[in-house]
Image (cartoon, rainbow, N blue to C red; front, top):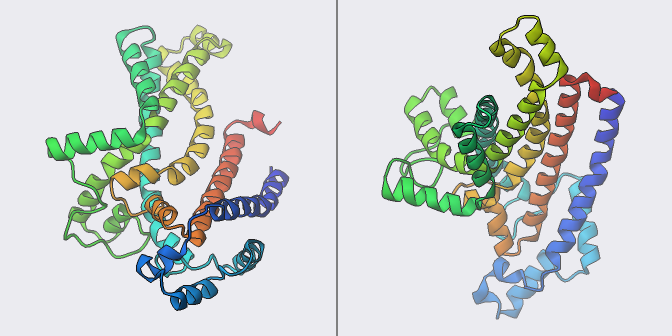
Length: 336
């Protein structure tokens, strides 16, 4: 495992370089002019301003020269400066990443814990009404478009019923907690501010629930299938023959082995949730990497687009590596 881990870590710089290269050339393949977002549409007719901006951002150089300059700066930890915000891309991403991480982790928690419980419940009631209802819910939850569910939830629970807060991470005129981790729920707890924690939690629940629905449906179906398969295994029949009750067999053996494949799904889902938060963050005005990516794409902010792809690629690679190691720890047979 140690040699395998070192090998995977050694491959990561090469993979990240490939991600950066593809993102750089794809973003620059669009024919629109990024100068409109740099100098503004009103100044596009001013040759002096256009020339100065073109030289400042290196847009007068060849594409390959721009690529070499970007990679050289990246090797020194410089991800460039955003055309739109005029701030270093690394600063923009660092300030927005905690919001997306908080949303993704809460969605992951809902999807895995609730999905496992409902999957076991469906398996233990195989063929009954509750099993059919849970399978239908899992199928519908995995199939519905996330943006449509987000808009529907906002209209129903916020605009119509008024039982959920509106978009944003906090209510209007509520100041965020002192920055420690950037996660409002955790920072408010660290500050001992109960009302602020509840406000942040209320704003977090609905977007996290919407974001967790595809994962929730997948976990329900996976756990249900695994539990039913494990219940027909030889070791389960042996345990029952020894006098163990159905609950003991289920809790000590079946569930433990049934949730092992969920570990792989969790690792894949971490990266997918963080980088797939674009639609949910846009609908709920969640100031994270998703909205940053959308705004950067609209304004052809090349450094920001490439930076988002780089961070997303790194998250995927590290989450998959941790998943593989965890899987091997949980199930020693994987190491063979």
